[in-house]
Image (cartoon, rainbow, N blue to C red; front, side, top):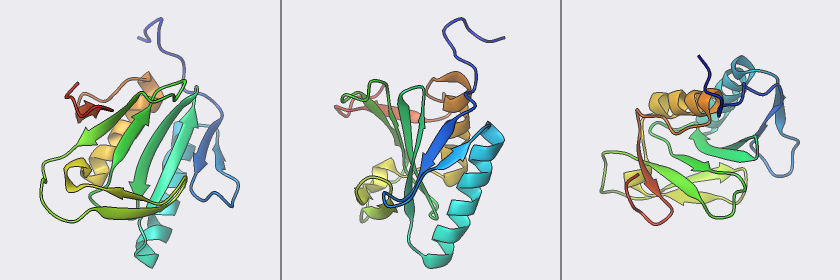
Length: 145
């Protein structure tokens, strides 16, 4: 049953992957999965991990494709500084660079999670507009939430 505070999955979800190109317009969660699968294959083939931004209800879901593990960040509407970053198990190593949506970004090893977990959390957020309970989260100030 849907909570009175949750909104239904929107019929217009934009997946941004390159600032010089139009986003992929998706009409369903299945379309989002298909777009992310396609972008993942293309990025993996070029060995250039790609940052994507999925925008809905004024929120933004930032994640990487073409790499496993990957990052996941949720920016909450009105996207004025409130965000949550997934936290993984790895704590040492070099940052991973992702190209694509927004400016190129580097993600620390502590923020890398399995790609399957990231995708599941993306789906969960689209369906429920909440952070996935499968993921450990920190806020913009590095505090566990």
